[in-house]
Amino acid sequence: MGLLAILRKLKSSPDRELRILLLGLDNAGKTTILKSLASEDISTITPTQGFNIKSVQTDGFKLNVWDIGGQRKIRPYWRNYFDNTDILIYVIDSADQKRFDETGQELQELLYEEKLVGVPILVYANKQDLIGSATSGQIAEGLSLHTIKDRVWQIQACSATSGEGVRDGMEWVIKNIRNKSILNK
View 1 (tube, one colour):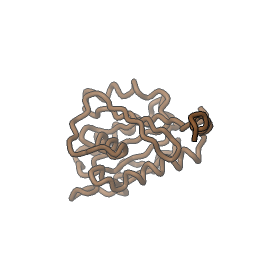
View 2: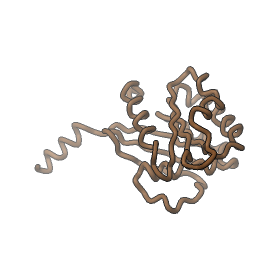
View 3: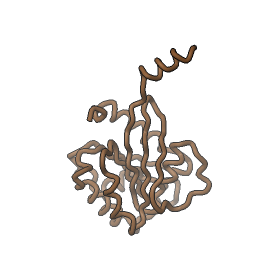
């Protein structure tokens, strides 16, 4: 195949780009999920002090994933990243039940943000591999996710370290993008 044919093929089938915002409290596993999606080594993860951005190609889409640190002092700055968000992914540490109230409050605040109104949300119930983890059903009930009526949402049990459930969540994202025409903004 000649260079012109390659360029025509690239031009005729450009990847559709999506902006995904990855949020959650510190130590929930956001960066591990991001590195897992990008097929990167997850053996050494350090707390995110600012943000990480990775582009992941999947099913004809270029997913630009913004992983923002979740420490309390950083959370007020989350709103600086809300513009043009196509999908919100919220990560919860299923084993840290002492912080469920705090994570629930942060999630509720995100749901009321004007720039995120109607944005589909995927909640990863991470760390399902740890003993004593709450199930995704228990988390959905505890956070009253069933009361969310202004957007589509999904909760996905996962383990970022093993990768189990991470791809399933992204399949929901892609399916949802195809079902909705959020690409025609």
